[in-house]
Image 1 (cartoon, one colour):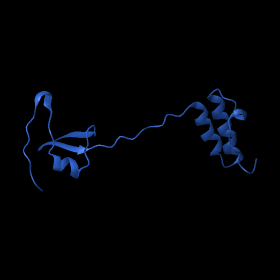
Image 2: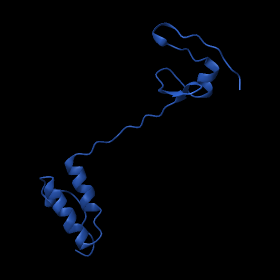
Image 3: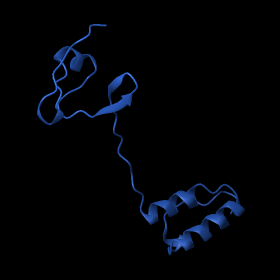
Image 4: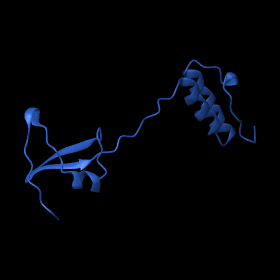
Length: 98
């Protein structure tokens, strides 16, 4: 591995050499994790994943659609009611045995 010496600039900025940026897919705006280690600072590419935030209605739909038995479905209905929602108004498929 080719070792590079780089200079820390104003406000702690560090310019990663072009060859390393290309090798690791670091483009402008890319996220990097700076991890303290006993031997120094480890910089490595970071991945940001978007998180879906579910509405109460979507949570209710998950609960109702995942019921496999009549007992599961009854439990799901009670959980949906705890969300102050009417299970009959939530689009879902009932288990085949109900």
